[in-house]
Length: 244
Image 1 (cartoon, rainbow, N blue to C red):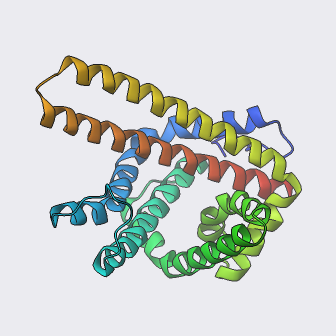
Image 2: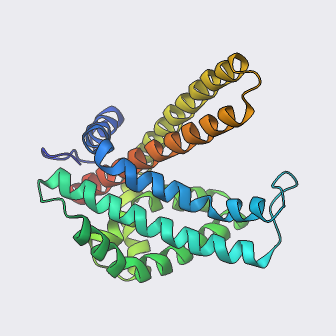
């Protein structure tokens, strides 16, 4: 989805990625603060766990407080990402960008979004547990779940069905688009890790500074990835809706 006419899902994978990239580049600076706050929210349970004298070295914690905090942090992240996607959609359609309106709209849809997210996780669990392939199928379809919930005003169950309805005819093309996007993000992450390794070797004895730099770059990379995949979800939703 771009400011111009969005592509249809029968367009090529390269056209879909190009449309998503255009929206990503146009909205990156406007949406990056949202994305960075969202990424940091996801880290709140880990911050709590480390601050309480524990370590994440030996697997996932079994502490109840940790998981309650993780649920709250996940809800906060979904809220922030929803507001960010509303901003991207407003920019793409030429509407006025309004921070207060974005937060209000995201808060209004948040209960439905959270219920839908829970139902989606349950369906994915059963899909992967039973035969794996149904889980993969649903995982690809659910990439457009947030745009469907934000812009089509459906209830949770209807929203899940709508995702399948939109993506199923073009599932392989959407799958290829997602795989390429993930590979691009992975390559960028590995390149950043290589640069950080070089800097760490050059800054021997500056442990705290290196750790702070690594943390900042990591948050930045994942925030940029969040903005890109939000743009991709919007593009695919717009393309699927125009193709339906």
